[in-house]
Image 1: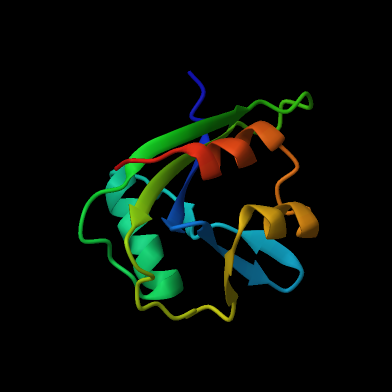
Image 2 (image 1 turned 120 degrees about the vertical axis):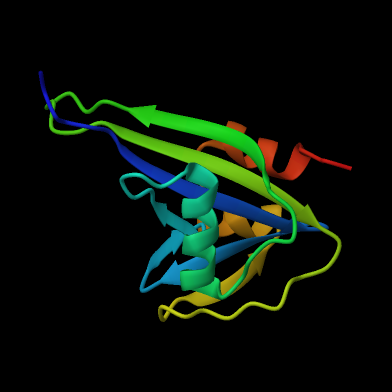
Length: 131
């Protein structure tokens, strides 16, 4: 039996009104989050990563937003990315702890910078509401 396991990553989409938080690391844009460790629950991993990256612990649990799953043709991996979303009334007090730049972007700014090329995902980020 193979001991290979998927590489599971958790990310969060923090939205305040018409702006969404994105981190810029060098020339790469990423949502806050990271890998789930062995024997770690998904929500625990997300909260740990948020504390490590932006010194933020949400007051309430975010909701499941989307799941991305990839099996590369070369057979060298299995990647699962779980996106959560949290819609807030005001911007939380956060600070980048790992050298990233914090940006709050509108839908037009995401398009202009070509950060997300999947239009369906982009539309969903700005369409969804939990209120």
